[in-house]
Structure formats: C-alpha cells, structure tokens
Length: 144
Picture 1 (tube, helix red, strand yellow):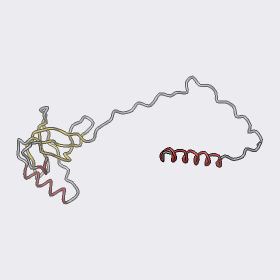
Picture 2 (cartoon, rainbow, N blue to C red):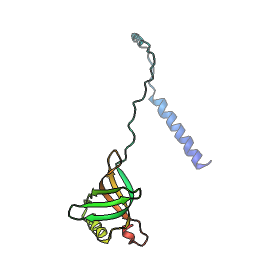
Picture 3 (cartoon, rainbow, N blue to C red):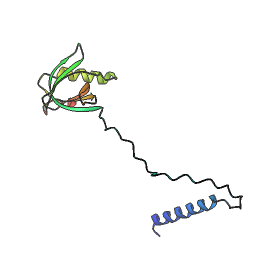
Picture 4 (spheres, one colour):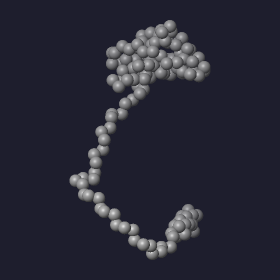
C-alpha cells in the first residue's frame, strides 16, 4: 500500500474514533420552554458600512535632487511630474544606519537622479523623507 494512502486512512480512522468518543449518550430531558419567534423584519441583510479608501502612508517619488540642507535636515527635490518639494528628513535610529545616511549625503550632488521614499498625507503630498536611493547605474552599489 502507498505510504501516503496508508497515512490518510489512519488519519481518517483516528478522527472518526475521536468524534465517536466525543459524542455523549443522549438522555431524555424535559423539553425546554418554547421561546417566541422573533418578529419578521423587512430584511435581515444589512448593507455593509462604507469603507474609507485605502491610504498609503509611504510613497516613492522618482525625482532629481535639488539640494540637501544639513542645518535644517531637509531635502529639496523635483519629482518627474515637475513638482518641487522640500521636506524634512527623518533620521534612522541605529548608529549604523545614520553612518550610511551621512555617507550617502556626502556622495549626493544636485542633479542626481534619485528615488525618495516619503511619508505622505491624505493628498499624497510628501511630509517627511524616510529613505533615498540613487538610480544612476554608475553610482556606488551600496547607494542603489
């Protein structure tokens, strides 16, 4: 017999035995008083509540770097659709990630093609830059 079929048969027999032992013997009990039936309503099906549209909290912007300001910790960029943005930069928490962010900032220059990951509001406008990548194929691989 095929081992898989054998295990299937054993599993079936074990589940049947477990369900048979779980059944309790039925004894005649006094009948429960009948409860009044609920009054019929026009419709028991209720309409589902309207759901709000799914909002993204992070959006990637393909852009050209306009500048970085270390004093105010902001980044200025122009997205591919022509809109210019200046948003604050959120620094990562770990020291290793901060070192990598500072190394990337040193390697960037205005005019570089980048992808900026930003937190966005309900209008999908960036409110804070959380990550950034260079898209230039000649850029160091650790920044792509």
